[in-house]
Amino acid sequence: KMLERLEAANLFLLPLDDKRYWYRYHRLLADVLRERLQKSEPERTFTLHRRASSWYARQAEVSEASVFISEAIDHALQGDHPAQAGELIEAGAESTLMRSELTTFLGWTESLPDQILISRPRLCVLQAMVRLITGRPLEEVTQSLERASQADSGGDFAGEIATVRAMLATFQGDGQATATLAEQALQLLPEESIFLRTLMIDGLGIAYLMLGDFPAAIQALEQAARMGEQTGNVLAAAGAWGNVAGLHMTSGHLQRAHELLERALELATSPTGHRLPAAGKALLGLGQVWREWNDIEAAERYTREGVACFEQYGDVGTVVGLASLARFSIEAGEFNIARGQIAEAERIAFESDATDIDDRLVHALKAFLALAEGDDKAAEQWVQDLRSAATDKPFYHLQELEQTTLARVLLGLNRPQEALEILNSVGRNAKKLGMDKRLVEILVLQALAHDAMGEEAQALEAIETALRIGEAGGMIRTFITEGKWLGRFLHEAARRGTTPEYVGRLLAAFPQDQPERMKQYDLVEPLSERELEVLSLLAEGFTNAEIGERLHLALSTVKWHTSNIYGKLGVKNRAQAVARARSLGLLTEN
Image (tube, helix red, strand yellow):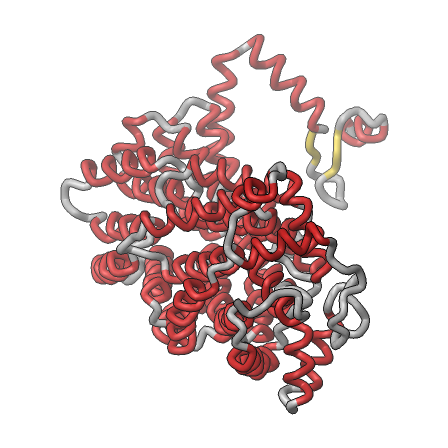
Protein backbone atom coordinates (compact mmCIF):
# COMPACT_ATOMS: atom_id res chain seq x y z
CA LYS A 1 0.00 0.00 0.00
CA MET A 2 2.80 2.39 0.86
CA LEU A 3 4.46 1.72 -2.50
CA GLU A 4 1.18 2.41 -4.29
CA ARG A 5 0.76 5.70 -2.41
CA LEU A 6 4.34 6.72 -3.21
CA GLU A 7 3.80 5.95 -6.89
CA ALA A 8 0.48 7.81 -6.95
CA ALA A 9 2.19 10.83 -5.38
CA ASN A 10 4.89 10.61 -8.05
CA LEU A 11 7.58 10.31 -5.39
CA PHE A 12 10.50 8.89 -7.35
CA LEU A 13 9.21 5.34 -7.83
CA LEU A 14 8.86 3.53 -11.16
CA PRO A 15 6.98 0.21 -11.56
CA LEU A 16 8.88 -2.64 -13.23
CA ASP A 17 5.87 -4.88 -14.02
CA ASP A 18 2.17 -4.58 -14.85
CA LYS A 19 1.11 -6.06 -11.50
CA ARG A 20 2.85 -3.30 -9.55
CA TYR A 21 4.83 -5.88 -7.59
CA TRP A 22 8.36 -4.72 -8.38
CA TYR A 23 9.49 -1.09 -8.29
CA ARG A 24 12.73 0.78 -8.59
CA TYR A 25 13.83 4.20 -7.45
CA HIS A 26 14.06 6.98 -9.99
CA ARG A 27 17.71 7.36 -10.98
CA LEU A 28 17.98 10.84 -9.46
CA LEU A 29 16.69 9.67 -6.08
CA ALA A 30 18.95 6.63 -6.22
CA ASP A 31 21.94 8.92 -6.80
CA VAL A 32 20.95 11.11 -3.85
CA LEU A 33 20.51 8.12 -1.55
CA ARG A 34 23.84 6.61 -2.60
CA GLU A 35 25.64 9.89 -2.02
CA ARG A 36 24.05 10.25 1.44
CA LEU A 37 25.04 6.69 2.35
CA GLN A 38 28.59 7.25 1.14
CA LYS A 39 28.93 10.25 3.45
CA SER A 40 27.22 8.75 6.49
CA GLU A 41 28.34 5.09 6.37
CA PRO A 42 31.19 4.65 3.86
CA GLU A 43 32.14 1.17 5.13
CA ARG A 44 28.59 -0.07 4.67
CA THR A 45 28.76 1.04 1.03
CA PHE A 46 31.46 -1.54 0.32
CA THR A 47 29.43 -4.25 2.03
CA LEU A 48 26.32 -3.44 0.01
CA HIS A 49 28.26 -3.39 -3.27
CA ARG A 50 29.67 -6.83 -2.48
CA ARG A 51 26.23 -8.18 -1.62
CA ALA A 52 24.87 -6.71 -4.84
CA SER A 53 27.72 -8.29 -6.78
CA SER A 54 26.97 -11.71 -5.30
CA TRP A 55 23.26 -11.35 -6.07
CA TYR A 56 23.89 -10.37 -9.71
CA ALA A 57 26.43 -13.21 -10.05
CA ARG A 58 23.78 -15.72 -8.93
CA GLN A 59 21.32 -14.29 -11.45
CA ALA A 60 23.97 -14.57 -14.17
CA GLU A 61 24.29 -18.30 -13.46
CA VAL A 62 20.63 -18.93 -14.33
CA SER A 63 20.12 -16.27 -17.01
CA GLU A 64 21.73 -15.53 -20.37
CA ALA A 65 21.21 -11.78 -19.96
CA SER A 66 24.60 -10.07 -20.21
CA VAL A 67 23.49 -7.26 -17.91
CA PHE A 68 23.74 -9.50 -14.82
CA ILE A 69 27.42 -10.36 -15.21
CA SER A 70 28.22 -6.74 -16.08
CA GLU A 71 26.44 -5.48 -12.96
CA ALA A 72 28.13 -8.16 -10.84
CA ILE A 73 31.56 -7.05 -12.05
CA ASP A 74 30.84 -3.35 -11.60
CA HIS A 75 29.60 -3.86 -8.03
CA ALA A 76 32.61 -6.05 -7.17
CA LEU A 77 34.96 -3.31 -8.38
CA GLN A 78 33.04 -0.59 -6.52
CA GLY A 79 32.98 -2.80 -3.43
CA ASP A 80 36.77 -3.05 -3.45
CA HIS A 81 36.63 -6.80 -3.95
CA PRO A 82 39.19 -7.31 -6.77
CA ALA A 83 39.50 -11.07 -6.28
CA GLN A 84 35.79 -11.57 -6.92
CA ALA A 85 35.92 -9.05 -9.79
CA GLY A 86 38.78 -10.95 -11.43
CA GLU A 87 36.90 -14.23 -11.18
CA LEU A 88 33.75 -12.69 -12.65
CA ILE A 89 35.62 -10.89 -15.45
CA GLU A 90 37.29 -14.12 -16.52
CA ALA A 91 33.95 -15.95 -16.41
CA GLY A 92 32.26 -13.32 -18.57
CA ALA A 93 35.22 -12.48 -20.82
CA GLU A 94 34.31 -14.52 -23.88
CA SER A 95 30.64 -13.49 -23.98
CA THR A 96 31.65 -9.84 -23.56
CA LEU A 97 34.23 -10.01 -26.35
CA MET A 98 31.90 -11.95 -28.66
CA ARG A 99 29.51 -8.99 -28.42
CA SER A 100 32.52 -6.84 -29.45
CA GLU A 101 32.33 -4.87 -26.17
CA LEU A 102 36.10 -4.46 -26.19
CA THR A 103 36.39 -1.18 -24.30
CA THR A 104 34.15 -2.54 -21.53
CA PHE A 105 36.40 -5.57 -21.08
CA LEU A 106 39.54 -3.45 -21.20
CA GLY A 107 38.15 -1.08 -18.57
CA TRP A 108 37.43 -3.99 -16.26
CA THR A 109 40.87 -5.59 -16.56
CA GLU A 110 42.68 -2.29 -16.17
CA SER A 111 40.76 -1.66 -12.93
CA LEU A 112 42.26 -4.79 -11.38
CA PRO A 113 45.41 -4.67 -9.24
CA ASP A 114 48.51 -6.17 -10.85
CA GLN A 115 48.65 -9.08 -8.43
CA ILE A 116 45.15 -10.19 -9.44
CA LEU A 117 45.93 -9.98 -13.15
CA ILE A 118 49.21 -11.86 -12.80
CA SER A 119 47.38 -14.66 -11.01
CA ARG A 120 45.10 -15.09 -14.04
CA PRO A 121 47.15 -15.81 -17.20
CA ARG A 122 44.03 -16.12 -19.35
CA LEU A 123 42.95 -12.59 -18.46
CA CYS A 124 46.45 -11.32 -19.31
CA VAL A 125 46.26 -13.01 -22.73
CA LEU A 126 42.83 -11.58 -23.51
CA GLN A 127 43.91 -8.16 -22.29
CA ALA A 128 46.90 -8.29 -24.66
CA MET A 129 44.60 -9.25 -27.53
CA VAL A 130 42.14 -6.44 -26.86
CA ARG A 131 44.90 -3.89 -26.36
CA LEU A 132 46.26 -4.88 -29.77
CA ILE A 133 42.88 -4.64 -31.52
CA THR A 134 42.06 -1.29 -29.93
CA GLY A 135 45.30 0.32 -31.07
CA ARG A 136 47.03 0.59 -27.71
CA PRO A 137 50.82 1.15 -27.73
CA LEU A 138 52.88 -1.94 -28.51
CA GLU A 139 54.53 -1.63 -25.08
CA GLU A 140 51.18 -2.24 -23.36
CA VAL A 141 50.42 -5.24 -25.59
CA THR A 142 53.85 -6.73 -24.88
CA GLN A 143 53.48 -6.11 -21.14
CA SER A 144 50.23 -8.09 -20.99
CA LEU A 145 51.70 -10.89 -23.09
CA GLU A 146 54.83 -11.13 -20.94
CA ARG A 147 52.71 -11.30 -17.79
CA ALA A 148 50.77 -14.18 -19.30
CA SER A 149 53.96 -16.03 -20.22
CA GLN A 150 55.46 -15.56 -16.75
CA ALA A 151 52.30 -16.69 -14.99
CA ASP A 152 51.86 -19.72 -17.26
CA SER A 153 54.59 -21.82 -15.66
CA GLY A 154 52.94 -25.07 -16.74
CA GLY A 155 52.41 -24.09 -20.37
CA ASP A 156 48.64 -24.47 -20.06
CA PHE A 157 48.02 -21.26 -22.02
CA ALA A 158 50.51 -21.79 -24.86
CA GLY A 159 47.67 -21.87 -27.41
CA GLU A 160 46.20 -18.61 -26.14
CA ILE A 161 49.62 -16.92 -26.19
CA ALA A 162 50.28 -18.18 -29.74
CA THR A 163 46.89 -16.73 -30.72
CA VAL A 164 47.92 -13.22 -29.70
CA ARG A 165 51.34 -13.59 -31.33
CA ALA A 166 49.60 -14.57 -34.58
CA MET A 167 47.38 -11.49 -34.37
CA LEU A 168 50.43 -9.32 -33.70
CA ALA A 169 52.12 -10.74 -36.81
CA THR A 170 49.00 -9.78 -38.79
CA PHE A 171 49.17 -6.21 -37.53
CA GLN A 172 52.84 -6.08 -38.51
CA GLY A 173 52.04 -7.20 -42.05
CA ASP A 174 53.88 -10.53 -41.88
CA GLY A 175 51.64 -12.99 -43.70
CA GLN A 176 53.94 -15.99 -43.43
CA ALA A 177 54.47 -15.54 -39.68
CA THR A 178 50.72 -15.09 -39.23
CA ALA A 179 50.01 -18.37 -41.01
CA THR A 180 52.67 -20.26 -39.04
CA LEU A 181 51.56 -18.93 -35.65
CA ALA A 182 47.85 -19.38 -36.42
CA GLU A 183 48.42 -23.03 -37.34
CA GLN A 184 50.48 -23.47 -34.16
CA ALA A 185 47.72 -21.90 -32.07
CA LEU A 186 45.09 -24.19 -33.61
CA GLN A 187 47.21 -27.22 -32.73
CA LEU A 188 47.63 -26.07 -29.12
CA LEU A 189 44.17 -24.69 -28.35
CA PRO A 190 41.72 -27.19 -26.79
CA GLU A 191 38.79 -28.22 -29.00
CA GLU A 192 36.38 -26.63 -26.53
CA SER A 193 38.09 -23.23 -26.89
CA ILE A 194 35.69 -22.29 -29.68
CA PHE A 195 36.03 -18.52 -29.23
CA LEU A 196 39.79 -18.38 -29.83
CA ARG A 197 39.77 -21.19 -32.42
CA THR A 198 37.27 -19.19 -34.46
CA LEU A 199 39.48 -16.11 -34.27
CA MET A 200 42.49 -18.15 -35.37
CA ILE A 201 40.72 -19.68 -38.36
CA ASP A 202 39.79 -16.11 -39.29
CA GLY A 203 43.44 -15.14 -38.74
CA LEU A 204 44.56 -17.97 -41.01
CA GLY A 205 42.23 -16.63 -43.70
CA ILE A 206 43.73 -13.16 -43.33
CA ALA A 207 47.22 -14.69 -43.61
CA TYR A 208 46.27 -16.34 -46.91
CA LEU A 209 44.83 -13.02 -48.05
CA MET A 210 48.09 -11.26 -47.20
CA LEU A 211 50.02 -13.89 -49.14
CA GLY A 212 47.74 -13.60 -52.19
CA ASP A 213 46.14 -17.06 -51.91
CA PHE A 214 42.53 -15.94 -52.38
CA PRO A 215 40.81 -19.37 -52.69
CA ALA A 216 42.37 -20.56 -49.42
CA ALA A 217 41.51 -17.22 -47.81
CA ILE A 218 37.83 -17.46 -48.74
CA GLN A 219 37.61 -21.05 -47.50
CA ALA A 220 39.09 -20.21 -44.09
CA LEU A 221 37.17 -16.96 -43.67
CA GLU A 222 33.83 -18.56 -44.55
CA GLN A 223 34.52 -21.34 -42.03
CA ALA A 224 35.27 -18.76 -39.33
CA ALA A 225 32.16 -16.75 -40.21
CA ARG A 226 29.88 -19.79 -39.94
CA MET A 227 31.48 -20.89 -36.66
CA GLY A 228 30.97 -17.38 -35.34
CA GLU A 229 27.31 -17.36 -36.33
CA GLN A 230 26.68 -20.78 -34.76
CA THR A 231 28.25 -19.79 -31.43
CA GLY A 232 26.98 -16.21 -31.20
CA ASN A 233 30.45 -14.79 -31.76
CA VAL A 234 29.47 -11.51 -33.42
CA LEU A 235 33.03 -10.18 -33.29
CA ALA A 236 34.36 -13.07 -35.42
CA ALA A 237 31.32 -13.63 -37.64
CA ALA A 238 30.82 -10.01 -38.70
CA GLY A 239 34.54 -9.52 -39.21
CA ALA A 240 34.99 -12.70 -41.24
CA TRP A 241 31.98 -12.04 -43.48
CA GLY A 242 33.33 -8.53 -43.97
CA ASN A 243 36.67 -9.96 -45.10
CA VAL A 244 34.98 -12.42 -47.48
CA ALA A 245 32.95 -9.55 -48.91
CA GLY A 246 36.15 -7.57 -49.39
CA LEU A 247 37.59 -10.37 -51.50
CA HIS A 248 34.44 -10.53 -53.62
CA MET A 249 34.58 -6.76 -54.04
CA THR A 250 38.20 -6.91 -55.16
CA SER A 251 37.21 -9.63 -57.61
CA GLY A 252 34.53 -7.35 -59.06
CA HIS A 253 31.56 -9.27 -57.63
CA LEU A 254 29.92 -6.21 -56.13
CA GLN A 255 26.43 -7.65 -55.74
CA ARG A 256 27.73 -10.67 -53.82
CA ALA A 257 29.87 -8.39 -51.67
CA HIS A 258 26.82 -6.27 -50.92
CA GLU A 259 24.81 -9.33 -49.84
CA LEU A 260 27.54 -10.54 -47.47
CA LEU A 261 28.04 -7.08 -45.98
CA GLU A 262 24.32 -6.77 -45.28
CA ARG A 263 24.50 -10.19 -43.60
CA ALA A 264 27.40 -9.05 -41.43
CA LEU A 265 25.61 -5.82 -40.57
CA GLU A 266 22.49 -7.70 -39.49
CA LEU A 267 24.59 -9.88 -37.17
CA ALA A 268 26.19 -6.80 -35.60
CA THR A 269 22.91 -4.94 -35.07
CA SER A 270 20.85 -5.48 -31.92
CA PRO A 271 17.07 -6.14 -32.09
CA THR A 272 16.56 -2.50 -31.08
CA GLY A 273 18.63 -1.29 -34.04
CA HIS A 274 21.75 -0.44 -32.02
CA ARG A 275 24.99 -0.98 -33.95
CA LEU A 276 27.57 -3.03 -32.08
CA PRO A 277 31.21 -1.99 -32.60
CA ALA A 278 31.66 -5.10 -34.80
CA ALA A 279 29.40 -3.45 -37.40
CA GLY A 280 32.20 -1.08 -38.40
CA LYS A 281 33.81 -3.27 -41.07
CA ALA A 282 30.47 -4.05 -42.74
CA LEU A 283 29.49 -0.38 -42.80
CA LEU A 284 32.80 0.70 -44.37
CA GLY A 285 32.47 -2.10 -46.91
CA LEU A 286 28.96 -0.99 -47.85
CA GLY A 287 30.34 2.51 -48.28
CA GLN A 288 32.87 1.18 -50.80
CA VAL A 289 30.23 -0.77 -52.72
CA TRP A 290 27.88 2.20 -52.99
CA ARG A 291 30.79 4.43 -53.99
CA GLU A 292 31.57 2.14 -56.91
CA TRP A 293 27.90 2.16 -57.84
CA ASN A 294 28.23 5.97 -57.79
CA ASP A 295 25.74 6.65 -55.00
CA ILE A 296 28.03 9.01 -53.11
CA GLU A 297 25.37 10.08 -50.62
CA ALA A 298 24.80 6.49 -49.49
CA ALA A 299 28.53 5.78 -49.57
CA GLU A 300 29.34 8.69 -47.27
CA ARG A 301 26.47 7.83 -44.92
CA TYR A 302 27.62 4.24 -44.46
CA THR A 303 31.25 5.31 -44.13
CA ARG A 304 30.54 7.90 -41.45
CA GLU A 305 28.49 5.37 -39.48
CA GLY A 306 31.33 2.87 -39.83
CA VAL A 307 33.86 5.36 -38.51
CA ALA A 308 31.58 6.04 -35.53
CA CYS A 309 31.50 2.30 -34.74
CA PHE A 310 35.27 1.92 -34.95
CA GLU A 311 35.80 5.02 -32.81
CA GLN A 312 34.16 3.16 -29.93
CA TYR A 313 37.33 1.15 -29.50
CA GLY A 314 40.05 2.81 -31.59
CA ASP A 315 40.50 0.08 -34.18
CA VAL A 316 42.72 0.60 -37.24
CA GLY A 317 39.38 0.64 -39.09
CA THR A 318 38.97 4.24 -37.93
CA VAL A 319 41.95 5.17 -40.10
CA VAL A 320 40.53 3.21 -43.05
CA GLY A 321 37.18 4.98 -42.68
CA LEU A 322 38.72 8.44 -42.39
CA ALA A 323 40.81 7.67 -45.48
CA SER A 324 37.62 6.85 -47.40
CA LEU A 325 35.99 10.08 -46.26
CA ALA A 326 39.09 12.03 -47.25
CA ARG A 327 38.97 10.52 -50.71
CA PHE A 328 35.33 11.59 -51.05
CA SER A 329 36.41 15.11 -50.09
CA ILE A 330 39.33 15.13 -52.54
CA GLU A 331 37.13 13.96 -55.40
CA ALA A 332 34.66 16.73 -54.53
CA GLY A 333 37.47 19.31 -54.56
CA GLU A 334 37.06 19.97 -50.82
CA PHE A 335 40.77 19.91 -50.07
CA ASN A 336 40.62 21.71 -46.71
CA ILE A 337 38.14 19.16 -45.37
CA ALA A 338 40.30 16.36 -46.73
CA ARG A 339 43.36 17.75 -44.96
CA GLY A 340 41.50 17.71 -41.64
CA GLN A 341 40.35 14.13 -42.16
CA ILE A 342 43.86 13.02 -43.13
CA ALA A 343 45.34 14.81 -40.11
CA GLU A 344 42.97 12.96 -37.76
CA ALA A 345 43.78 9.64 -39.45
CA GLU A 346 47.49 10.40 -39.13
CA ARG A 347 47.14 11.18 -35.41
CA ILE A 348 45.40 7.86 -34.75
CA ALA A 349 47.92 5.95 -36.87
CA PHE A 350 50.82 7.56 -35.03
CA GLU A 351 49.42 6.57 -31.63
CA SER A 352 49.07 2.94 -32.72
CA ASP A 353 52.68 1.75 -33.04
CA ALA A 354 51.85 -1.97 -33.14
CA THR A 355 51.38 -1.68 -36.91
CA ASP A 356 52.61 0.50 -39.75
CA ILE A 357 49.79 -0.54 -42.08
CA ASP A 358 47.72 2.48 -41.08
CA ASP A 359 50.74 4.79 -41.45
CA ARG A 360 51.37 3.55 -45.00
CA LEU A 361 47.72 4.07 -45.88
CA VAL A 362 47.84 7.66 -44.62
CA HIS A 363 51.05 8.42 -46.53
CA ALA A 364 49.54 7.10 -49.78
CA LEU A 365 46.46 9.24 -49.20
CA LYS A 366 48.60 12.35 -48.60
CA ALA A 367 50.28 11.70 -51.95
CA PHE A 368 46.84 11.41 -53.58
CA LEU A 369 45.88 14.78 -52.09
CA ALA A 370 49.16 16.37 -53.18
CA LEU A 371 48.52 15.12 -56.71
CA ALA A 372 45.00 16.57 -56.72
CA GLU A 373 46.28 19.95 -55.49
CA GLY A 374 49.16 20.05 -57.97
CA ASP A 375 51.78 19.91 -55.23
CA ASP A 376 54.48 18.24 -57.32
CA LYS A 377 57.15 18.58 -54.64
CA ALA A 378 55.15 16.68 -52.00
CA ALA A 379 54.10 14.04 -54.51
CA GLU A 380 57.70 13.51 -55.67
CA GLN A 381 58.86 13.24 -52.05
CA TRP A 382 56.36 10.46 -51.40
CA VAL A 383 57.65 8.60 -54.47
CA GLN A 384 61.19 8.77 -53.10
CA ASP A 385 60.09 7.76 -49.60
CA LEU A 386 58.11 4.79 -50.89
CA ARG A 387 60.97 3.50 -52.99
CA SER A 388 63.49 3.85 -50.15
CA ALA A 389 61.22 2.18 -47.58
CA ALA A 390 60.54 -1.04 -49.47
CA THR A 391 59.54 -3.79 -47.05
CA ASP A 392 60.04 -7.53 -47.36
CA LYS A 393 56.81 -8.13 -45.40
CA PRO A 394 54.14 -6.29 -47.40
CA PHE A 395 50.46 -6.50 -46.69
CA TYR A 396 49.35 -7.70 -50.13
CA HIS A 397 46.35 -5.42 -50.63
CA LEU A 398 48.19 -2.41 -49.23
CA GLN A 399 51.17 -3.04 -51.49
CA GLU A 400 48.84 -3.07 -54.51
CA LEU A 401 47.25 0.19 -53.33
CA GLU A 402 50.66 1.81 -52.90
CA GLN A 403 51.83 0.72 -56.34
CA THR A 404 48.64 1.95 -58.01
CA THR A 405 48.95 5.28 -56.18
CA LEU A 406 52.60 5.45 -57.24
CA ALA A 407 51.54 5.02 -60.86
CA ARG A 408 48.94 7.79 -60.45
CA VAL A 409 51.54 10.14 -59.01
CA LEU A 410 54.00 9.39 -61.81
CA LEU A 411 51.27 10.08 -64.36
CA GLY A 412 50.53 13.33 -62.57
CA LEU A 413 54.23 14.21 -62.79
CA ASN A 414 54.09 13.48 -66.54
CA ARG A 415 56.24 10.35 -66.33
CA PRO A 416 53.93 7.95 -68.18
CA GLN A 417 56.59 5.43 -69.17
CA GLU A 418 57.58 4.84 -65.54
CA ALA A 419 53.92 4.62 -64.57
CA LEU A 420 53.24 2.11 -67.32
CA GLU A 421 56.01 -0.21 -66.15
CA ILE A 422 54.49 -0.31 -62.67
CA LEU A 423 50.96 -0.74 -64.02
CA ASN A 424 52.02 -3.62 -66.25
CA SER A 425 53.51 -5.39 -63.23
CA VAL A 426 50.56 -4.94 -60.86
CA GLY A 427 48.18 -5.63 -63.74
CA ARG A 428 49.70 -9.07 -64.29
CA ASN A 429 49.29 -9.86 -60.59
CA ALA A 430 45.71 -8.60 -60.54
CA LYS A 431 44.81 -10.70 -63.58
CA LYS A 432 46.50 -13.79 -62.14
CA LEU A 433 44.61 -13.47 -58.84
CA GLY A 434 41.26 -12.56 -60.41
CA MET A 435 41.24 -9.09 -58.83
CA ASP A 436 38.92 -7.71 -61.51
CA LYS A 437 37.97 -4.49 -59.74
CA ARG A 438 41.61 -3.55 -59.25
CA LEU A 439 42.37 -4.70 -62.80
CA VAL A 440 39.78 -2.31 -64.24
CA GLU A 441 41.38 0.60 -62.39
CA ILE A 442 44.82 -0.46 -63.64
CA LEU A 443 43.58 -0.78 -67.24
CA VAL A 444 42.09 2.72 -67.16
CA LEU A 445 45.39 4.10 -65.85
CA GLN A 446 47.27 2.14 -68.52
CA ALA A 447 45.04 3.79 -71.11
CA LEU A 448 45.92 7.19 -69.69
CA ALA A 449 49.63 6.37 -69.83
CA HIS A 450 49.41 5.16 -73.43
CA ASP A 451 47.40 8.22 -74.39
CA ALA A 452 49.95 10.52 -72.76
CA MET A 453 52.61 8.90 -74.96
CA GLY A 454 50.49 9.30 -78.09
CA GLU A 455 49.66 5.59 -78.31
CA GLU A 456 45.91 5.87 -78.91
CA ALA A 457 45.42 2.34 -80.26
CA GLN A 458 46.88 0.80 -77.11
CA ALA A 459 44.85 3.20 -74.96
CA LEU A 460 41.62 2.18 -76.69
CA GLU A 461 42.47 -1.50 -76.34
CA ALA A 462 42.97 -1.07 -72.58
CA ILE A 463 39.66 0.80 -72.24
CA GLU A 464 37.75 -1.85 -74.16
CA THR A 465 39.18 -4.59 -71.94
CA ALA A 466 38.26 -2.56 -68.85
CA LEU A 467 34.70 -2.12 -70.13
CA ARG A 468 34.19 -5.84 -70.71
CA ILE A 469 35.35 -6.63 -67.18
CA GLY A 470 33.64 -3.70 -65.48
CA GLU A 471 30.22 -4.35 -67.02
CA ALA A 472 29.80 -7.66 -65.15
CA GLY A 473 30.12 -5.99 -61.75
CA GLY A 474 28.28 -2.81 -62.63
CA MET A 475 31.37 -0.69 -61.98
CA ILE A 476 30.86 3.04 -62.52
CA ARG A 477 32.95 5.19 -60.23
CA THR A 478 36.29 3.72 -61.30
CA PHE A 479 35.66 5.08 -64.79
CA ILE A 480 34.12 8.48 -64.17
CA THR A 481 36.61 9.64 -61.53
CA GLU A 482 39.34 9.65 -64.17
CA GLY A 483 37.88 12.72 -65.86
CA LYS A 484 36.32 13.80 -69.15
CA TRP A 485 39.33 12.76 -71.24
CA LEU A 486 37.88 9.25 -71.08
CA GLY A 487 34.74 10.29 -72.96
CA ARG A 488 36.19 10.07 -76.45
CA PHE A 489 37.52 6.56 -75.77
CA LEU A 490 34.16 5.46 -74.41
CA HIS A 491 32.40 6.76 -77.52
CA GLU A 492 34.90 5.07 -79.79
CA ALA A 493 34.57 1.78 -77.91
CA ALA A 494 30.78 1.92 -78.21
CA ARG A 495 31.06 2.75 -81.93
CA ARG A 496 33.15 -0.40 -82.33
CA GLY A 497 30.44 -2.45 -80.59
CA THR A 498 32.09 -2.78 -77.17
CA THR A 499 29.41 -2.79 -74.43
CA PRO A 500 27.40 0.11 -75.95
CA GLU A 501 24.64 0.01 -73.30
CA TYR A 502 27.19 -0.01 -70.49
CA VAL A 503 29.03 2.91 -72.10
CA GLY A 504 25.74 4.79 -72.17
CA ARG A 505 25.28 4.29 -68.43
CA LEU A 506 28.83 5.47 -67.79
CA LEU A 507 28.42 8.60 -69.90
CA ALA A 508 25.14 9.38 -68.15
CA ALA A 509 26.91 9.12 -64.79
CA PHE A 510 29.46 11.84 -65.54
CA PRO A 511 28.95 15.06 -63.52
CA GLN A 512 26.40 17.48 -64.93
CA ASP A 513 28.98 20.22 -65.47
CA GLN A 514 30.48 18.15 -68.30
CA PRO A 515 29.76 19.22 -71.90
CA GLU A 516 26.59 17.55 -73.13
CA ARG A 517 28.26 16.15 -76.23
CA MET A 518 31.24 14.08 -75.24
CA LYS A 519 32.28 13.85 -78.91
CA GLN A 520 32.74 17.60 -79.19
CA TYR A 521 36.45 18.10 -78.68
CA ASP A 522 36.53 21.85 -79.27
CA LEU A 523 37.03 23.82 -76.10
CA VAL A 524 34.16 25.92 -74.80
CA GLU A 525 36.74 28.44 -73.54
CA PRO A 526 40.09 28.53 -75.37
CA LEU A 527 43.40 28.60 -73.53
CA SER A 528 45.12 31.97 -73.20
CA GLU A 529 48.63 32.50 -74.58
CA ARG A 530 50.09 32.28 -71.08
CA GLU A 531 48.17 29.07 -70.40
CA LEU A 532 49.51 27.59 -73.64
CA GLU A 533 53.05 28.47 -72.49
CA VAL A 534 52.45 26.78 -69.15
CA LEU A 535 50.88 23.78 -70.88
CA SER A 536 53.89 23.40 -73.16
CA LEU A 537 56.25 23.34 -70.18
CA LEU A 538 53.99 20.89 -68.35
CA ALA A 539 54.28 18.59 -71.35
CA GLU A 540 58.08 18.84 -71.20
CA GLY A 541 58.01 17.56 -67.62
CA PHE A 542 58.90 20.75 -65.73
CA THR A 543 57.64 21.11 -62.15
CA ASN A 544 55.49 24.07 -61.12
CA ALA A 545 58.49 25.69 -59.43
CA GLU A 546 60.63 25.28 -62.56
CA ILE A 547 57.87 26.71 -64.74
CA GLY A 548 57.68 29.71 -62.42
CA GLU A 549 61.42 30.31 -62.79
CA ARG A 550 61.31 30.04 -66.59
CA LEU A 551 58.30 32.33 -66.99
CA HIS A 552 59.20 34.62 -64.05
CA LEU A 553 55.94 33.82 -62.28
CA ALA A 554 55.15 33.22 -58.63
CA LEU A 555 54.45 29.61 -57.70
CA SER A 556 50.88 30.50 -56.73
CA THR A 557 50.36 32.05 -60.18
CA VAL A 558 51.62 28.91 -61.90
CA LYS A 559 49.22 26.81 -59.83
CA TRP A 560 46.39 29.18 -60.76
CA HIS A 561 47.18 28.83 -64.48
CA THR A 562 47.47 25.06 -64.11
CA SER A 563 44.08 24.90 -62.41
CA ASN A 564 42.55 26.93 -65.25
CA ILE A 565 44.11 24.61 -67.82
CA TYR A 566 42.71 21.55 -66.08
CA GLY A 567 39.27 23.12 -65.89
CA LYS A 568 39.18 24.13 -69.55
CA LEU A 569 40.46 20.76 -70.73
CA GLY A 570 38.17 18.85 -68.37
CA VAL A 571 40.98 16.87 -66.72
CA LYS A 572 42.35 16.31 -63.22
CA ASN A 573 46.13 16.09 -63.58
CA ARG A 574 48.97 17.01 -65.90
CA ALA A 575 49.19 13.64 -67.66
CA GLN A 576 45.53 13.90 -68.60
CA ALA A 577 46.07 17.53 -69.60
CA VAL A 578 48.94 16.63 -71.94
CA ALA A 579 46.99 13.76 -73.50
CA ARG A 580 43.89 15.93 -73.96
CA ALA A 581 45.90 18.81 -75.41
CA ARG A 582 47.55 16.51 -77.95
CA SER A 583 44.19 15.12 -79.02
CA LEU A 584 43.04 18.70 -79.62
CA GLY A 585 46.17 19.57 -81.59
CA LEU A 586 47.37 22.04 -78.97
CA LEU A 587 50.69 20.20 -78.63
CA THR A 588 52.88 18.36 -81.07
CA GLU A 589 53.74 14.72 -80.35
CA ASN A 590 57.30 15.76 -79.50
